Length: 344
Picture 1 (cartoon, one colour):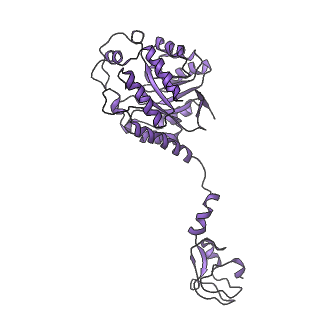
Picture 2 (picture 1 turned 45 degrees about the vertical axis):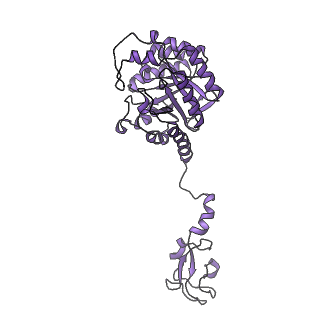
Picture 3 (picture 1 turned 90 degrees about the horizontal axis):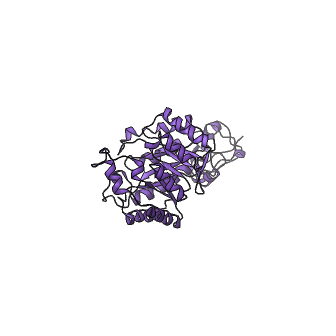
């Protein structure tokens, strides 16, 4: 399958370099200037795409005391503090696009989805918690725009229901493998799940939203088919915030972007000799040479021929055993590369 997804004009798929999504998320802690700085810093490192979260609290959740595993206060308090106003989100989208970057945001409610649609986002990133929120997923799919769906905390059965909604809507979509642990121990990342997603959902673009420390698992995901790589991003790891400890900083983002391109271009191929290797062959190969003077009619033996660099001779080292015990057709001086017409 040569599936592709059009993300604001940037094609994403098996035949294209992986796209790195720098997830700013709520790392700004509700501070507009911090959010803007992270966009700037991501752009300076070559990022094509930044992603935020869109929280309209009253439509997203009822007041509660549930405390996430990576936090010390309730999810209600976190989101109340970290949510941005509609006008701030409009300004951040405008600033992102002025830098020729893609602006994505994850809606956590119907009101948030409607806000983003009014902002004319080109695609939707849906979080793992909404993977089996079929009413919201169907509402977002009705907009007719590409969807990138994270699949943490869901199995193949529940993902299948989501895929049915997306495919019935006729939209382009991607599935990101996720482990919803913060941070994710390497042994819990389970990169093999991407292969399963690829087999079960052949129409999907496959990617990885990674919560482990560093870039290792993202790099490893590329040969397994990941063409979207999402990592939490912060300008400064000393800033407060529940997602800061699992975030990469500007230098790590730069490394992820460069490394993902390098790995993608290194994939594929077969074990053949390239034309571009010819200059190296000339000095690195060995040719059969004489190690003493040889008279016409004399047998070639281990005492008078051996293999030495360079590889510019006609008879290469691989033919050494083929010419032993054959006779010289002419007198040959010591330290001469052998040619076939020198041998009977």
